[in-house]
Image 1 (cartoon, rainbow, N blue to C red):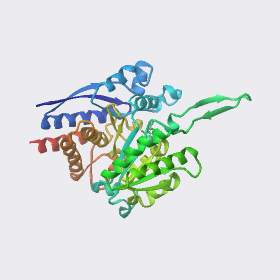
Image 2: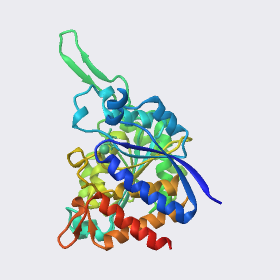
Image 3: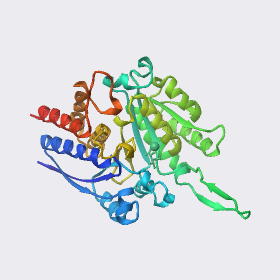
Image 4: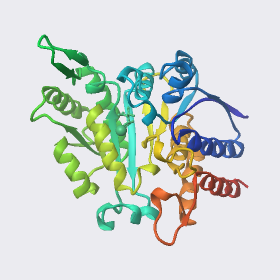
Length: 364
Ligand code: IPM
Ligand code: MG
């Protein structure tokens, strides 16, 4: 029997539409093979939504996302909208989506792909075998804490304010996701904070430590964020699962991504308690190469695979996509961001076509 899924597509800005179109082609091929039918609806977010409607997250977009089985997002943002006030920037659309769907847990895997080891800026022996999962809290911390804003003092000076705040319940629910994630992986969890300076981090560390009593099979450690950043580039193989707050997770997940050679390869999942999850590449909208057919669509394709696995419970379909991505790399196809000598340089569309060809062969 054919399974039907309603998927909301949010192509967004920059390279978003190009990489999304590759992911949709891939999903359609895989759908035929596994008897899945996808009902895609496309909605506006980010700069594209600002241009069209004046706001970065139109209500219809959020509604459409709420009423779907999963959301596939590409990327938002670009120079064009950089001078707008923060509540009207494309980023506000993404933050609004996270808040609106209560996507408090962001899973960002950084796993080295053997075929791409030489694309890493770090030495082979440092990165070979790296397999890290960053669990980033996504709807709290300094991104959402109040007060926030730019205020003018009595003396006429301007003050910019943001507030880093976590309540126990917020720490606990992300902590549980992290312990459970670690349990299914290497059984090691490193919690990252700044408890030597910040009270919010002291509470974070206390709650995570308390929680560990319920997960005695998981080995818990703690690092300050500055040390964690250093350890990530010094000896990344010591990490299995990392749990941290919104801001630290934003920063560390970019660093972790780069261990693998290119941020252009990495998918992510943002999950809530009872709303559809959002699946998106870790990378941004790359406005400098938008429309030039140079983008790497593989993180978007792997995000679609993650969606199949986590949201739609179709692990075999996910695996088929993941294996095809490895195979396209094995056949030496490379976009510019992962190019190395002797490989075949292709654009976004050609990479997609090569992938579809492999999928079709595997599907017969
Ligand atoms: C990310 C991005 C976003 C963030 C921006 C675009 C708002 O950097 O998803 O990591 O800071 O969370
Ligand atoms: Mg980021």
